[in-house]
Amino acid sequence: MEQYYEKAVDLVTGYITSRLGLNDPNRLAFKTTIVWFSKTLQNWKAIIITDLPDNLMYEVTYDGNKKQAYIDTYRKLENVCIPDEGVQPAPPKQPTSTSISSNGPKYNIGNINVDPADPRRGIQIGDGNSQINTHYR
Image 1 (cartoon, rainbow, N blue to C red):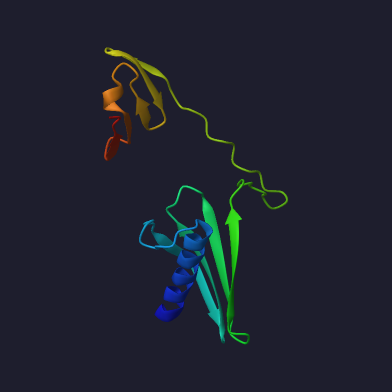
Image 2 (cartoon, one colour; image 1 turned 180 degrees about the horizontal axis):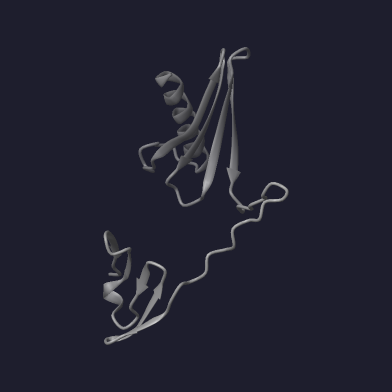
């Protein structure tokens, strides 16, 4: 199966490189991830994403009878929930609180904390047990 994964990634990498007009594939470094793969008989299909900022997704379909691949390119436009009949969808999540700290205003939305008085502190995300901090430079 590894050979099919490699072929799918090589096809998408070559396609992106040619689409961007780059002659040297090493000039633009990006990572690819196979998010789904399926093989039946001589045919296979892979869905691949990259870390490029274009938010595109690539579907590679290989026709084993014709010995050729097809690449379809998609961009996610929206994510809509459509529940089964009789099932109520969960309400959208709302901000849970706003608080004032002794150092000035501090906005607390769920587990995301922003202190505008000191932008060097950045954004803190956490639940008390674990925390992620982002800082502006």
